[in-house]
Image 1 (spheres, rainbow, N blue to C red):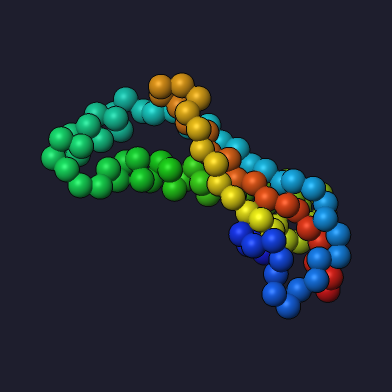
Image 2 (image 1 turned 180 degrees about the vertical axis):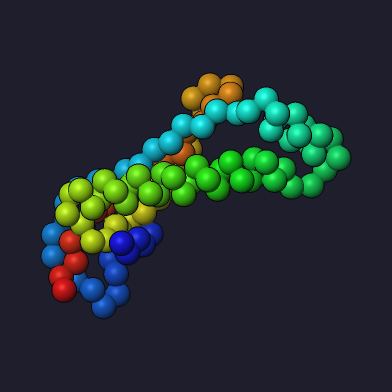
Length: 105
């Protein structure tokens, strides 16, 4: 599946626009991970526990968006974006979204 942040793909023609494709994941914090992260915050430097959590959440959201686009019959997604928001003090949502399209072969 071709995914791009632009609204068109150079050298490709969009045959059909199929609608929005989105994938979302809500992840909560983990007590043990938070404890280790707090120690890193005190010492300074990258908080690798949270970096990994965000990276995993983004990949899962992209996978879900891609699956939704495929179910619509798409072979590409244009206008791809991420959005995030807090759901509670201990959980956050990562949303991947874009326009599912069928490219001319």
